[in-house]
Amino acid sequence: MTDIWIVVVVVGVATMLFKSAGPMFLGTRPLPPRVRSVVELLAPVMLTALVVTQTFGAGEAVAVDARVPGVAAGAVAVWRGVHLIPAMVIGAVVTALARQLGA
Amino acid sequence: MRRVRVAIRHRVVAVIRPARISHQASKFSVVPLADPSAPRFRDGVRAALPLAPAPFLFGLSFGVLADAAGIGVVAATVMSSTTFAGSAQFAIASVFEDGGTALAAILAAVFLNARYAAISITVAPIVPGNRLHRFFRSQLIVDESWALSGRSGRFQWPVLAGAGLLLYVLWVAATPLGALVGSAIDDIDALGLDAAFAILFLALAAPYLRNRRAPQAAGLAVVITLVLLPVAPVGVPIVAAAAACLIGLRE
Image (cartoon, rainbow over all chains, first blue to last red; front, top):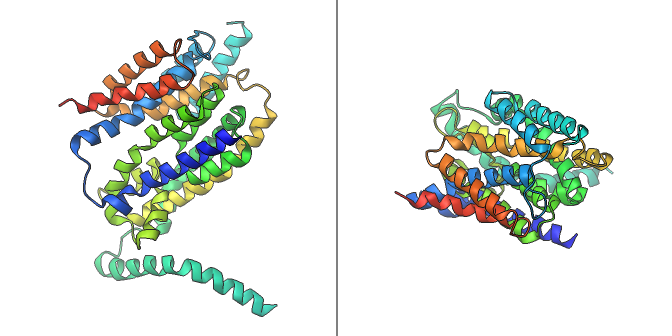
């Protein structure tokens, strides 16, 4: 409970400061190019890491299980331009079926 | 009775009015003279309407995942109304669901949201009002409202405000609903929802991969995460993967 509220407060304050950084503090002065190119890569890098842990993570271990065919099916759907929500449903159904089959 | 109501109304108006006046003033002094076709607040709401199902369903999904991660409905809703950034909130829930620490959850979310510092600079000139107003108004910046507000080739505050507010209301309202749905589901893994959230992260990452160095950095992040998963405490592999963005330092 306490841990969760610490996260809620710290992340909330940090995000509010990030979002107001330009309009409140930095004005229109652009970030140095090198800083900008690092910051621009943060979102894709972190999201990619989350794809990996959400697909292969099993506590402190790597597992290849029923999630893999589901994520693969959803990835193909996203790649083919299927809207995100249907793609998530496809992935969930494939994984649920694979689990039923005992994968 | 009537006097009380007036007093209450008066007090509310007094709180809201400074924002109204500065907003209207900028509209009336700039818009009708310079450009009668300039967008208004409602144009922003209208621009975001086609997107409306997505943030609502995301909000529901976040509520479901938050419930599975042991984040209570109140904490999840407070998080949606203060952080208001989908990917970071999903990251926090994902770390907690796997049994990671608060520190790992915080770092993952802060790394994800650092991009808003860069984004907010691009709209700094258009956010109106004094410093305090700009602070609160800039909270309406999310990826979607920002993208919509820049569609015409230059950023327009009324579009950002209208779209941002619609997305905010949907996101915050859907979160407790999702938590309720989640509490009715015994085991989200049996429904394959763990795979669905992996696809969510994948789809959120996809648009960024057009950035020149992003595919390389993402590949490195995959390697770091896979190598650390079996040996590092839960949550640490995600945080360590942030090092992959140092590729951006290269000329």
